[in-house]
Length: 106
Image (cartoon, rainbow, N blue to C red; front, top):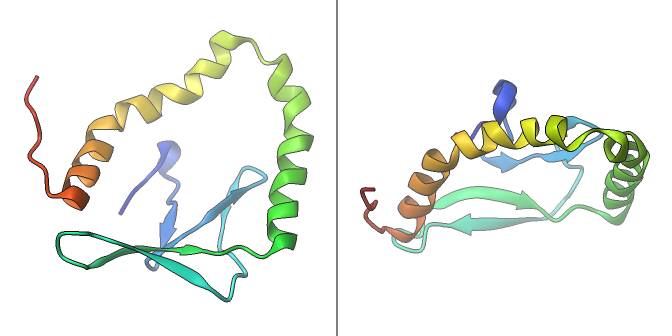
């Protein structure tokens, strides 16, 4: 299972959650797209085909958050990226699993 910094889970019960207003939320979508491992055809996660009102909700939340984010000093903003950078090896491993590539050693 993939996790983001702070222990928040972005996948629940095999479904990718939407990030809206600072929280991971299950979509109200009635349709999903499977993301499959091309080597095994195993479904890795189901991605919601979010309805327009849900997309609008996400856009409104982003627009509301932008003024504060814009005033946030770059040194503080970059702190949000460090945990993601630290997760790069896990992401690389997941990507390699998807494509069945061996990890390179550096």
